[in-house]
Amino acid sequence: MGLLDFLKSIFSPKKENIKVVCPNCKKEFFLPADRCPHCGVHTDLLFGIRCPKCKTINSLNTKKCKNCNADLEEVAYSYQKEKQIYICPICGYRADYYMTSCPVCKTKFV
Image (cartoon, rainbow, N blue to C red; front, top):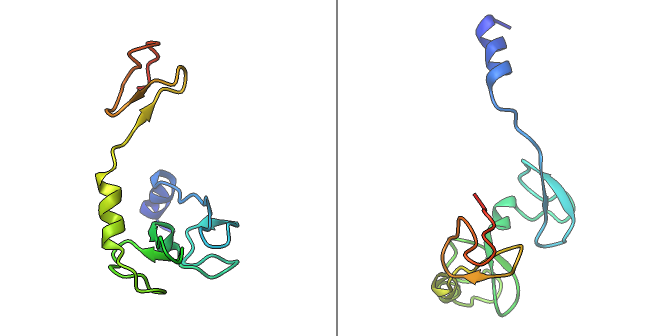
């Protein structure tokens, strides 16, 4: 190991194991992993679209469900139309815009 390798190992960010829950079997495992060690589902499916008909998890770039061939673009479009709601954890005030502080109880978020 050279001096540069040593300095890289000190200053480079450590890869932490991130605990996630498998969307298929609901058991916990650590990332980075290609598949869930319990049921074998790919980790790229952790961020996916669940088919409204058969509940199969599909990747985000899929247009049709791999199980029942349902149209998933319509499901993705309906999610884009929904507004994000922000809720104050102190008083419960609801807003459809990002708040840096609550206008009701004056709690600062940032």
